[in-house]
Figure 1 (tube, rainbow over the protein chains, first blue to last red):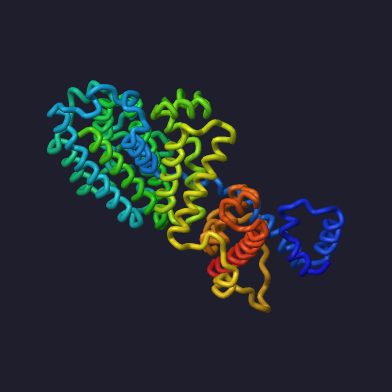
Figure 2 (cartoon, rainbow over the protein chains, first blue to last red):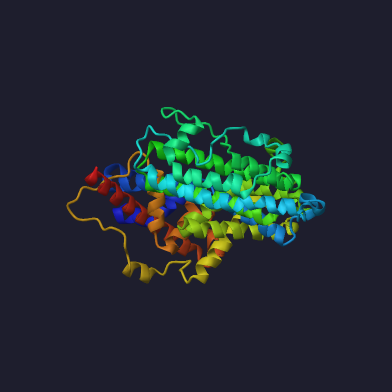
Length: 265
Length: 196
């Protein structure tokens, strides 16, 4: 068997079931030919490693949000299962008015994300920066429905102030307020919770249980993504891809807020 | 909510999705999202397009879920649907689903081995990111066959049917794709060694 024969018959060897005679001739040649041995070894390596790429990438949160919205629009999700009664389209002026805060918060998320991402590369690694609005901390899943009724935010009192606060403060001040230690970046994947998140959860709590659960879950996922990516950026401040990913995560969160607002109003 | 979802089997989720239960759709999405998105991403090498394609694949699946009778595995059904969505998109954009040999030979962008240079072997393991980048550099036709066979595990007869080529053509393109990947990877490794 020659090197040319090996080249020709290699696909059969890698993917098929070569007969014993062929295999023996092949093995005999490869033993004495380093080039062919290297070729075979490399192609086997590529083939085996390629299979590991099958499930490596996680789609952004917005993909499911868009799918769910489209299914709902097409009537494939039964509305009586997800949003019984008039809750789906609230007619209360109070509720309609109370959702206004979401718009500036969504815009603020993008602005704050952009700020954090663009300034992060200049920060020392030790200066850990949490997501932009962790002014207060509370378990996200415990979003109290009661608070929605008693503490519905107004655009001027909460979100706009929060937005401008984040935009004006810069990462270090926000980090200080959040109480995160600069030397101990948060490794916990559980979502950080901010006042705006609590308000968001309170708003979606007026939706049917399954819809509310979807929004809660998506918020948790995107917050975890922001937190994880932020921690990575803290460790690798020069990684442009990571910074872009962080910006994308903020955009996803803004989109989630926007979609919720469209739904509730 | 999550615990409850995890207790539901895929078959139960399919039945509930047929009834229009949103959580069931989400369960099915979460079960398969990584595989579907990764497949789209590998085939088009563009995250934004991959998102759109994954979204379209799931929407097509959910629109047709009422017709799923369970003769084949749900995942097989979904993955074939995803491949069809991606191939349709490639055709719409005028990209070759099957490589044209003459075109590729004339427009070969793979690095050539220079005589007298040391032939670096890809010993050990291949960095995942490097392999992804090398796949991204493959011409679309080669990339399609490589992704479907070596990443997704489709057989040549399945690929030939989906892509619309002969089985021999599928085998030939796979082999050339692997050789090209090897060249790319060796080139990347050599470049890294130079700069590192």
